[in-house]
Image (cartoon, rainbow, N blue to C red; front, side, top):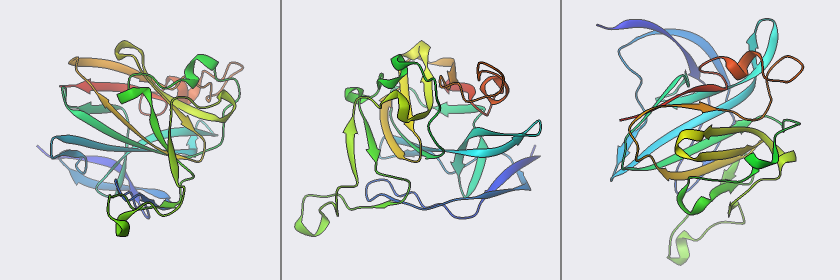
Length: 219
């Protein structure tokens, strides 16, 4: 049975994997009748998913950061992130935020991805082409593979301790992480940068599912 759910309409966002082209985005709350979210999925044996993070989301009269799933022109709360097992996952993370002070240095390192690296794109607005022919070469130095991000540059992390995955998210950048999720089950994902409320920064969005924490459901 179809149920009414609240989504966030994505007004402008362009994400092209391969030839990367990422544009600015903003959103507004809308209601839509929908049976399930769509827009992510498997293509050629690879599963693609995009998360977008913004900093100005209202919670209890404060503005706090939040991750969303980009799906068919909507921003869906990242409460449950479903991923197929034994499949190459290509996760694109777009951050519209600034660094968070006090991120533990241990979360600076990329772990659990292919080669323990991520592709860090130089800013949330970038263009480029990939290929071997002279007409499809990269246009400019738009990104690089990195194995860590300085703690002072980290806005958030996507950390799933149970499967050894840690993706530091640099504030204001776009990242592409590739990994395999080979253990089925439900696993908690958590931002490990203290970006919430309270003296420690671990209140508010940090402990609210679909904001800075949630579940990876690997099937």
